[in-house]
Length: 216
Image (cartoon, rainbow, N blue to C red; front, side):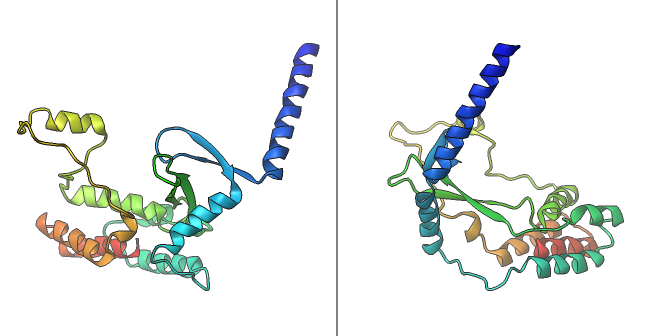
């Protein structure tokens, strides 16, 4: 018992020492973009790489935090929904005390100069739960199955195992830069409408799903 206490005290001192060194040297820990590697780097370098990414894109600084006004708009919109969501669903769809989405960065160790991959966490955003409901609604009222999506590389191998290619063929892949910020909202909403029309969804139900898509 006495030995266990000594061991515990020693580990506690080591942990405090490491924590103090991390603080003194302004070290920050993050994950690599690929794999399960944990990276320690200078906090200024981490922030600098993130700012480099933001400055290179079409982003702008807002004068005020729009979260409160957006939350108000979400509540007003949900009041107009009567067919595809009941009262319990509406309560479940709202986030209490929502906050703006948080940006953090993963380091691309496989790229020159180790740029970052931005990740935006929406777990506290006003519409995070509405997004989940919207996905279920679209799945319920349509038979939508993505034609070109795969879950992992194993599925890709299984999908192409019977494909016969010429001997001089090469398998290539294309990487889309800034995929999600590049998705046009208006065109996306139009695609949702077309999908609902294709499945002969009731026009009133369709309108409510589209309204939810817009606020999302």
